[in-house]
Each structure stands twice: as C-alpha cells, then as structure tokens.
Amino acid sequence: MERRRRFRHIGLFEVCNTLLMLAVCFLTLYPMWFVFVNSLNSPQQASLGTVNWFPKELSLASYSVVFNDKTMMNGFYITTLRTVVGTATHVLFTAIVAYGLSKSNLIGRKAYMKIALITMLFSGGLIPSFILMTKLGLYDNFWVFIIPSMYTFFNMVIFMSFFRTIPDSLEESAKVDGASDYGVLFRIVLPNSMAVIATISLFSAVYHWNDYYQGVIYIRSQNLLPLQTMLYKIIAENSMSFMQQQAMAQFGARLPGNSIKFASMMVATLPILVVYPFIQRYLVKGVMIGAIKG
Amino acid sequence: MFQYRTGQMKALLKQWQLQSMVIPGIIWMFIFCYIPMFWLIIAFMDYSIAKPLFDSPFVGLKHFQDFLSDERFWRSIRNTLGMSSIKLILGFPIPILFALLLNEIRSLRFKRTVQTISYLPHFIAWTIFGGIALNWLGEGGVINQLMMAIGVQEREILFNSEPKYFWWITFFTDTLKETGWSAIIYIAAISGIDPGLYEAAELDGANRWQRMWHITIQSIRPTIAILFILAVSGILGSNFEQIFMLKNNMNMRMAESLDLYIYNMGLVSGRHSFSTAVLFARSIVALGLLFLANSTAKKLTGDSIF
Picture 1 (tube, each protein chain N blue to C red):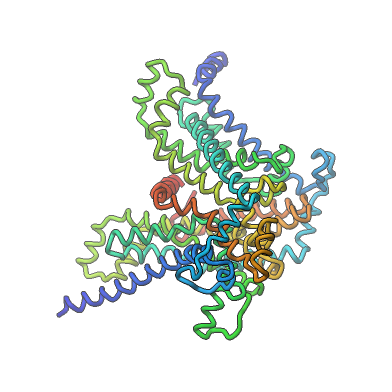
Picture 2: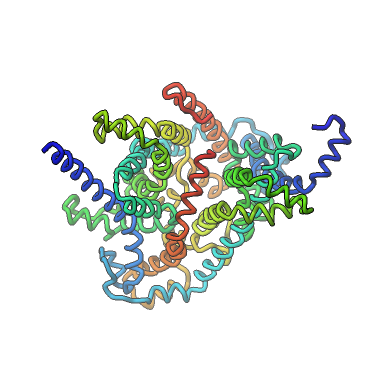
C-alpha cells in the first residue's frame, strides 16, 4: 500500500515535469516554425499574421522576391565572406598567439600574460573604439569585420590550456627531427587539437553570421552591409530595398511586406538551423571548457 | 634566467620563432585594447574628430557636470537599473529552476532532446528573434490574438508602442532566448555531484524536495554565487543588441538604457567627448560594483571569483 502511494506521488510530479519540459520545447520551437510557415504562405495570408500550423496557401513568391533581390543577395555574400574570412583569421591568429604563450620557457611570458589579462578587465568602450576605427581607415571598410575580432582573450586561454595538455614528448621528438617551432605547431600541435579548433571556429562563425550591429555602427555603403544589418533595417526601421518596394507594389497595397520579411528571416537563419543539430555538441563542449577555466 | 645581458639577448634570439608568434598578438592588443583605453582621455577634452588629439583643449570635468545635470541621463540610469533589476530578481533563478527540473527527468534521451532544443534560440540572431517578437506584439499579432481569444483584453494593444510594456518585453524575450543556454553551466555542475550523496540521503528518508535543497542546491552553490556576482556587477550594462532591435521612437522613453544613451549621444548626435565621459564614469562604477559584489558574496557564502 505504502509503496503504491509513493509510486503515484512520484508519477504526478513526473507527469507535470514532463509536460513542463514539452511546453519549454514548444515555446522554443514555435517562433521559428511560425516564421517558416508564414514565409511559405502567400503574401496575402502572411500579412494576416494568424496562427497557422501549416501554410494555408503554399507559395514561394516571397522567396523569389528575396532571391531576386540583388541587394539582399549581396548582403548574403558579404555575410558569407565575413564568416569564412573572419573565422579563419580568428582561429589562426588566436591559436598562434596562444601557442607562443603556452610555452613556459618563453622569455617575458609573465609580462605578456599581464598585458593580455588587463584587456579583460578594462576596455575603452564604444566611442574610443569608433574613433580608433575611423583613424585606422576601417570605417566603412570590409576589414572592420575581420581585424578587430581576430583575437579574444577568452579563446586564447581556451587554446592555451588545451595546448598544455598535449604531451611534451610528442613535440620533443619532432624537435629532435629538426622541426622548427612553426613546424611543430602546424604539423604536430594543431592536428592534435581538432576538437578545440572546431569548437572555437563554430563560436566565431556563429558570431560573424549573427552579428548585425558592427554593420550598423561602422558601415555606410549599401554594398558592404551584411545580411543581418539589412534585416535590422527592414524589420526595425521598416525600410525596404528598391526590389522589395517594387514587389510590394506588384502584390497590391495590403501590406504583403510581412511575408518578404519572414522569407528574409528564414534565409538568414536557415544555415544556422541546418547545421545546428550537428554542431551543438561542440558548442556545449566549448562553454564547458570556458566554465572550467573561467 | 640568465645573469648577463648578452646571454639574455642570445636566449631571446634563440627563441625568435616563439617570440614572433606572441608579439603580433601583443601589438594587436595595444592597438585594439590599449589605444581605446588611452582615448578615454577625451572625456576631459573638447575633442573634435577632425583634429589631431592634442589640438583639442582640456576642459576638466565639464562633461561630467553636463551629463550629471542631464535629465535624459538619469532617465537612462533608471531604465538600465529597472531592466537589470527585473532580469536579476525574476530572471536569475529561472535557469537554475530549469536545470533542477530537467535533472529530475528520468529518460536520458528525452532529457538530452529537451536540452538541445532549449539552447537553440541562443544561436538565433537578435534580428530574427526581435523580428518575431515585434511581429507577435504588433497589430493583429499572435499575442493580441491569444489575449483576445482567452478574454484577457478586449481590444488590440500595440505592446511595443506603449512605453510601459518595454521592460517586460525585454525580460520575456531574453528569458525565452537565453534560459536554456544559461542553464548549461548549472546542468554541468549538477552532473558533477557524487550520486552516492543522493543514495545516502534516500536511505535516510529524504524526499525529492529535501534532496534537491540539501544536496543539489548546496552542491552548486559556488556556481550560483559566481554567476550572481557577475550578474550584479553587470547591472549597469544592458543587452545592446536586444534593446537596439526592440526600441522605437514611441517607446524610447523607457527603452533608452545607458548603452543606448551613450550610442545616441556619441554616434547619433556626435558628442564624442560627452558620451566618453559617461562611458568613463560607468566603467569606474562597474569595476567598483564588481569588487563590492565579490566581497559581499565572500562574506555571505565564502564563495568568490577573486
């Protein structure tokens, strides 16, 4: 009798808890589903904004507007370029610095580490950075996306502590064979650090893909705007590109802009959504390493 | 390492490769971190971006007096503290609660699936997430439909055009987006607890809640303390990407946080020296807050960052 009562009590909690967790999943997934459904709806349907589980009138009209929009496609190109170049330079530069700093026989190591640590505690902030970028000629320049984000203290520490776990004997034997420090780094250390390289690359790539506000602050020319900055302008400032205005005129006056917004949002998120299931393990690993070090 | 200068030079030359790996990094730090710190000096000048730095006159604390007597500055302080307090008081326990409840799920597969789904929104850009929020909160949006369907409100409300809702919108959107991600660290801490403790407690007749309170919470207390210190010391900050996305001319009265004020004054109105003065004052206060929160936590719980 007693055992049964206890069983039932636990059962009630378990049921509520499971339902709660399902609710969390629903709340998390539904917004993205909503965008997906409405991006596939005909512009007239999407402008109603009603809650649908599936598209009412299936239509790819909004996508064709987005994909035919030269400005948007240029934004897509800038974002892709920035993500590839930004991630590659970040990982390479940060890893090289971290490797140098991971060597305890490095002369001046203590001073270097102090210099690096102070950058974590203090920073100039928005206005001084803005002035600096202007003075460096990085304002309205593609490299403003790349050079200032080539290094972060946090990722340097993650690399450094990972490099220290690689057995010295591995490096020693390469040294005996006459390899230089760069040779050891590129032929022995980096190939043995693929897990941490993957994690940091992913974080860097997601940052570059999602960031919109560097574009808001530092970019003036239309042809250098990343996709996310364009989205910001379309959604928050309600500005439309010429192509979109034409498309809107074509669809009639009833604010079909919504479906174009949804389709653009989908285009900007799809790469993340598609790779997410495969990369999420690395992302969690990354935050764990960070948490242990931090 | 070496007693003699020549010896040191030789050693340095011998490891020129290692040095050439580190020195570019140090140069980068000087340019992108130390020079901006140095530029904070314009807080005490009437700086004009067109002229070389020292051609601009020093004006002492003029800009500090100016912003301290600016009503809009105090309004931005109020907004920042308001939004941060809601986030701190109501928002801080949510990821802990989520981690605790998730931990009670028996099926490992279900647990993993929920966890994976829960941190997906963290990787969705604020442009997208904010865009959905703006759509849902607007005319004919999902929230209005829902509220009218269940009879909470009779007419449509343009939530994002009414300033009084803004703080809550930032709170709810932030909670939806970041709860799963913030919970990871607690989930990791919980998974590190020795299962033997639970078994022993169960033998002693402790029920689920007692085990949760006496074992789980007590074990992850250092993690909670550290994250709380960081949260308190960040109280003068705000999520710029979020607020920038959700603000508009109608709700600016409640939306302009300190960050946004600095942005508006510095980059929109072009008052570089003035907003650098605000920036400067804020970093001093924030650093003070960090030390204060740290020592308080140390006294209360014995856990601290440094």
